[in-house]
Length: 227
Image (cartoon, rainbow, N blue to C red; front, side, top):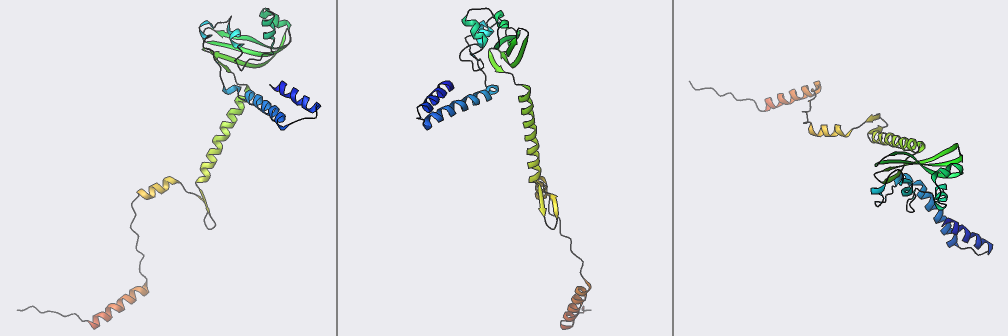
């Protein structure tokens, strides 16, 4: 798709006729390919018809199915298959190839994608594991570290956000912590009686003067008991 889009775009340039549709098609194909490559770690593939006959001899044929998104059809395995050669001829070729790295029939198979430089020199590119017929791409070390770092940073950021939600500031008081559980405890705790402040000397003298004035205006009457 990308090759066709580039060809049509090149033809349009040659004819001095280029449209936004050609540019959009090329951009869309590039974005889709990049999106697919970035998301290979998050997808899996399975063909249930192969599961009953899956073994060490057929697992590479199963992996080379056209609908498998992990398989590169430009690899040397395709050349060997088209020429009906054995897999031993891969050692004499240069380029991308797939090999069976480990097998634990009938559950686990590990396939490696590698770049062959010479009969004795290869560069590993990716590993794929097949569990019960389902193919996954094994994450590389960089992806694992990146995921762990992002998880740790997210946890630290969440902790800081949670802590900042309890932080309070006032110009006269400065900074302090205000937790929600303190509010709940204050609501549940019964209100204590307000302690009365002691009266001042002025208040006591004023009350005494008022009582004396009332006693003079309304003197008490003493009732004598009859004998």
